[in-house]
Image 1: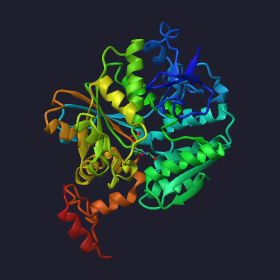
Image 2 (image 1 turned 180 degrees about the vertical axis):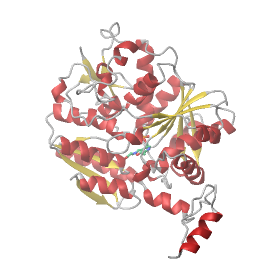
Image 3 (image 1 turned 60 degrees about the horizontal axis):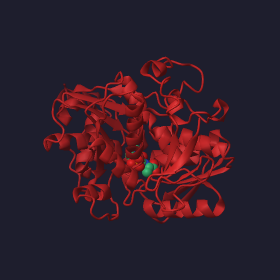
Image 4 (image 1 turned 90 degrees about the horizontal axis):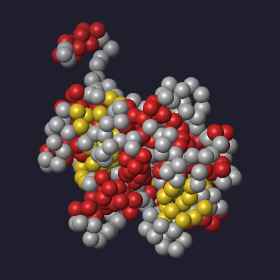
Length: 429
Ligand code: F0G
């Protein structure tokens, strides 16, 4: 079994054990390329279905259940895992009605060990760091990558180093990085600048970079598609809808879906819809102008996870859009927070950026791009507890430029039974 790193632009190949994030000849992004031709006969739905319910490592992980497609040939003892994945697929009638479709599945990646999909990419990224003999790993982050990296680095006895902007990090995420013992650098710069700084520092100091520019991250994140399609009995939905920030997921989904089609695990490709926040929409702008000229933006949105103006995986996301006949949509902070209140109100909940999936689906249905009868799989990327401040501010009516449409206001009641009864009588269902 041979695997290599391969440039997405010029196809130049490099050995798998090189520490490399871009092509040395043309600067293009790199793929991890496995030779799956030798595997194809063995791989089938039944092969992976046979591992469902496994109790022992590594197949008890929703990433490593698909090991042959993630990182074939490595020894199980090299794997750094927290039994990530195995996340639920929800069908919530009220949420589907809000979106305007008959069939909506929501895959909740906030149910991963550190509360976001990043754990799927971190198990592969930190495993590769261990294989390479690294003792330090680093990332720039809007909060979830850093929380996840801190956890997996601690598990692997490595030093985790995180580059955080000094404002607008959601509280839950900040707390995780500190709690898991990472070295936390608060820097007076936005995510995009922190990303540049992390790359420069990693290069200079020989630290392994674990942002999604690292192609091993995306290998793990492909498993969101593998697992979702397994849960859907290997029947592709019409649409997959995902928030887009640094565009790692969008890129991983395209690669994973194409591999599944090539191997014969599915018989058609779903269309991908990437949803960006209006204030952080460089891919949307690029897409809307026919990919003629790309310009980064200065990002601003309540969905701080996707407050990114210059996504590192742009080229891979464009490739995904081509492969899947995909589309890009943008949604306002108002639409994001209202959609979040609908998901929260169904008792499931998610963080603001995740609600792009629902807000975007609704908008694409209104625009006639997604049809009512289409089957839609939306990805919820992060847990409701990640950003309690945004939730409380929304319901308290304290978010600038957002007028809450689905408000659950706190009621102030006196220390008095009559008062409590009066208030509860007013609120009968
Ligand atoms: N949703 C959540 C909750 C995220 O944390 C992120 C990215 C995204 C969506 C966007 O995903 O980058 O693959 O397009 N968060 C990164 C971080 C950037 O640092 O935690 P993407």
